[in-house]
Image 1 (spheres, one colour):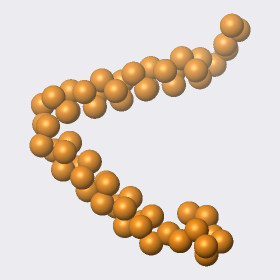
Image 2: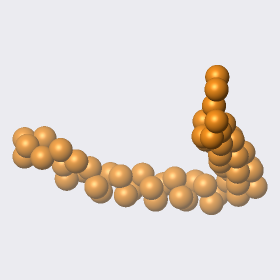
Image 3: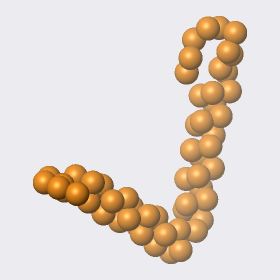
Image 4: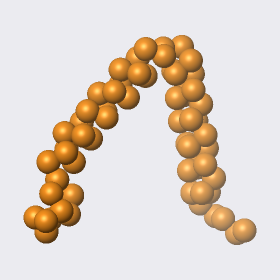
Amino acid sequence: MGEKSGGLTNMIIVVVALVAILLVVDTAFPELTKTVTDDMQGVVESTFGSYNPSDGVSP
């Protein structure tokens, strides 16, 4: 492989750590994750809800 800096290894470790944190938080605080997910969905819908492809501008 010849990986000198370990960038790929570090990225994999970070992704695994974030998934582990997400699972712990989702298990410990299911209502919090539901609230955050619903609020994020609202932000996405309000952002792209007004998007009109005929305007010729990509989001």
